[in-house]
Length: 400
Image (tube, rainbow, N blue to C red; front, side, top):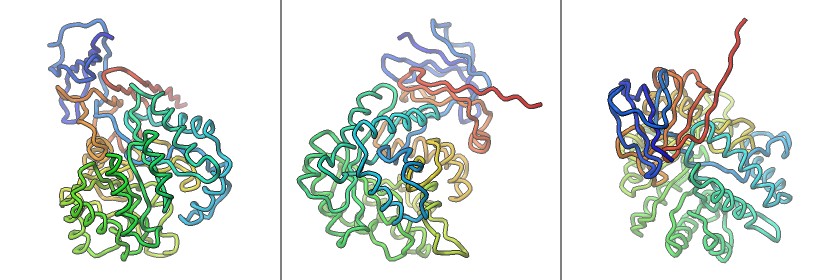
């Protein structure tokens, strides 16, 4: 495809620029003041649009997506959601997972997402890896449009099954140490098996308001002791938001020293956590400010899309960023960073954005500022992946 010239786009710093995308390299070739770049065979007028780095979704569950109405009305707490999902999952097939996951990724892509890390459960029954096989098929199908990373999620699964899953082509190994009888042993086993397969690790860590939960600190200590260099992520880390500021700061420094990325998931954790606190209800978020102050790579994700763990969610990182402003008390720029550059950093992906030499994964939104993007939702969007237009959403609004 010929290079694509985006004319008159407003960049995050407020300047208006023409941006040349090189579809051969997948990078941004040139950025210049309006009118300085030569007319090309392919152009788009982005006057009135804010051109941003494309968001990445650092934590999804595509195998569970869009099953809320199928699983039935639920109480809304984490243990009930786990029970309901396991009961429903007994009957799901590989084709069912593929179809729902495809629909969910298409929603994300239309909202601007060009990279997704999804967890996939090891299921019950005679074919426990049917969900993984479905997502491996989807990963191949989405190549060139959405980069898909797959993390195998388990709790105390047999090692033979984990080796099989990673041998099939999963990108990372996950776990839920706080649900194990021995969290420290679970973490050590996960790191060991991941190292054997040369893959990264992404744990569901401390998804509880219990201030005594220790997954994150145990993980940081284990990573420092092992010298694990394949990429480690801790998702949720809810309990860190329940400890005193001094302890949160100490733990954040340990996490930073271990090079662990943290993913906070406001939409689902605000829904699931805190139901047993009818007054002064805790936020159900990790300690985002101490983590940022310590230099931890922080990402924010959407987690569940209308499944037993959360009946809402539209696969929109701008919704996630808005929640990080209102519930996490980040600035709009910090919140946008958490779903764009921060998310890509946690996923181990190179920088993207409207900058020369950056990956040409971009989101154009009809808006004048970041605060407008996050505050007004702004559904009309153009999405670019590798320098190519991969999605366009237009809205017709009539007010009488």
